Image 1: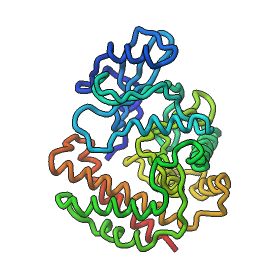
Image 2 (image 1 turned 60 degrees about the vertical axis):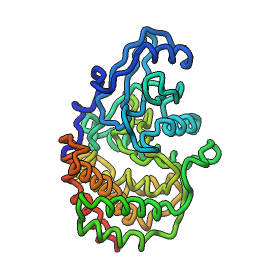
Image 3 (image 1 turned 90 degrees about the vertical axis):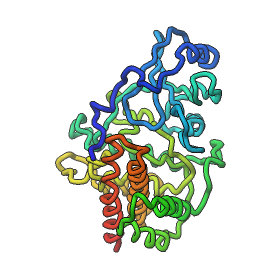
Image 4 (image 1 turned 90 degrees about the horizontal axis):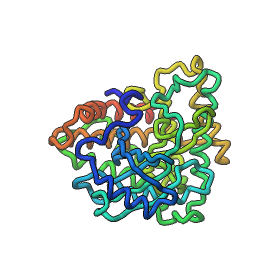
Length: 355
């Protein structure tokens, strides 16, 4: 499988077939709900592979971003743009860099699905975790900016910002392992894998005793951020669709998994010469996060990595089942399905490395 390239994922294009909506209806909603809005309005669609279609709204004075539920039948609870809008709004004054939300629309009659409009944050996107566009001197500063941002997120008091009911507190790993194991076992058509079967036995028996809760992003990667146009700092964290209340170390390990992730799967550093690139080592990156979150160390880090590879493998196993059933017939989905056993193997290698 190949990860999306910057050329194929960056920028905008004409609105794709099946994703067109009534621009005039949107313009009327903007006039009534977005302070300072003034048309005329031009709509383009971002190329990136977000599951929630994302559009650039261009006016003479300003540009905006619209995120909507996809058209057609969707599973209950999926593509919850209202949750994205809620978490972005809640984090607005916390120091976590997020776009400003101008408004949420829960009336299907406007453009056919629920949507929200947020500010367009200008800056740089990086689709390659080695940051090839950045100078060798500045690379560690960009990694430190990501580290500082995720640490800041995990230190937010979720009750104080009105997110006490944004997810369930406690037993995060037990609930997640049961959920993904059930999905894997029930998808008979996608088949079984010995590494996955081993993980289903091992993970629930080895859950660490610590039980923390924080706001978690769920997909905190370099390609889900906008960096300042010239400075080594994160200007905005995007794609909060998987955010919830969960274990902060699960979220951090999911992010730090980039050190072990083959770059052809998703943005990863496996096989990269970190010293030559002047990228901090995995141990240095962990230590920086610990210092920022008042930890001495992360003694169960191997478990957290194994869990996240297992979670991603379960997601790809589900894609494999949909490919077999003909409900996910795209070439991209087929390539993801082929990667499933490799992810399960990486999870088991993480288990085997635990001392």
